[in-house]
Length: 161
Image (cartoon, rainbow, N blue to C red; front, top):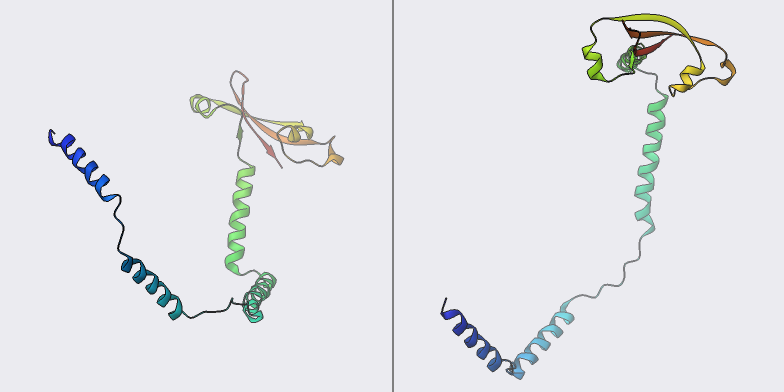
């Protein structure tokens, strides 16, 4: 630790002494000659003009993809596609028949007994829940089922077709 200030002073003195030093003239001349040789040896290529044929490949690829997608869409569905579509339809029907909770999940877990009460509600009720309705049928009613606690508190609802 005691040598650090002494070392700093010695390095500062070395820096001051060597700041005026310059490389000899032959070094500058050798560097300039090497740069000139490199420039002369490098082939000069003109600015490359894009070839019109280079644009044909991406356009041909895009056209081929368009034709293939058209062909695939026009093919009749296979059995695998039908089974996937029927599975999706079954899940949608199942989700449509599930109850939509009105209270928190914690409260639903603590409910001991609940009753399912069938009822008819105005079609406008669907719009209040954010579902799309036909304005021409605004006066119609919809079958619904309410999940209610014994004390009459509404827990969940579902609309029945």
